[in-house]
Image 1 (cartoon, helix red, strand yellow):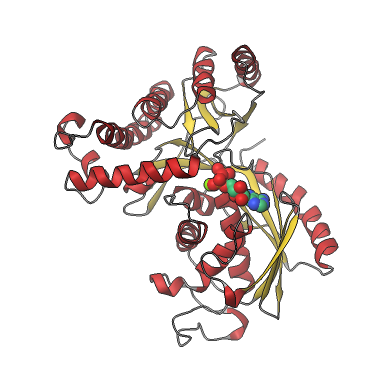
Image 2: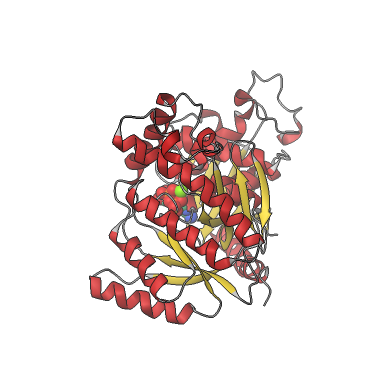
Length: 418
Ligand code: ADP
Ligand code: MG
């Protein structure tokens, strides 16, 4: 089976039940079904809000949105996961107006409506209006919608169900209202929804890969120049990406994430650079770049970011040269740096990494923001069963709950399903 088959098979399987459920809940026919994927990040963690490099790929697991326009300016959104329908008026949207899970949906619609406020341009506009450039800057005109949300992305596991939700809703609403936006523009609007509406100060990685993911390729993304570059992860006959969902509950994740971000900003300010990325570009040892920083904690945080950016670029070169084993070593080094310098790992992720390495993986690391979530490994193909029992054994011995272990292959980004 080719690597593209996973998400297209899932799409076909999901679209029909989504339509059926839509009919049941909204007593009307949906106009279409859209999807956007979760992601796994191979390397480049906590670098995206430091203008740095990341290398994620889109998963086959996706969030599906069946949708239909409404004439009354209302939004009704039902999530199967939340088992709840939330309703709000498009006109009344502003940060704080909708909270909880529906905030990601409301935030995306708000972000699209107010794109002009942050200089992001969208072509065309809903309902035959003229682009809204004369509507007090609130372009484009977006009307109401009914939305049915179904998802195969695990929630809160570090595989970015939040970006999958934002991007699937963004694409559905934009297309329904004849608004065309570049994928990268939609990604930035989705990030803005999460930053300014939901209140999570994330970087651009998750939304970027959810929009721009492609089958059979990871994407090296420079978050300063905003340029994506597809990267082959190795011959699928020889190398496989494995994911361990530790199912460890997120602990303190929001506050700690924001704290890391502000520590990086303080480190950059004290070192007199606009972002820590500038230091990873320098051809000098990291300790030399950090010489102007007295605070031991800030030094460790900055050291992670600077060395991580370098590891990403090294891993890209190693993969291009076919040296998968050394690329894996960079992933393991990334984990150690996230554990010791950035302090975002937990015992469950550390044990999974060691179990994967002992089972013969080329490299393994925590993936996503941290404090729980998933571990990703680069491994020789065909090791899934062995790795699964090795990790489960180790978890049982440590008294942890049972983890989920699966193979992941790069899949399509946001798309209309039917
Ligand atoms: P991650 O993005 O790693 O999965 P986050 O904490 O960033 O974790 O986002 C998870 C949150 O996103 C959930 O708690 C929920 O509020 C929202 N969410 C994601 N997918 C859905 C969905 N299908 N239905 C409702 N809410 C969702
Ligand atoms: Mg998220």
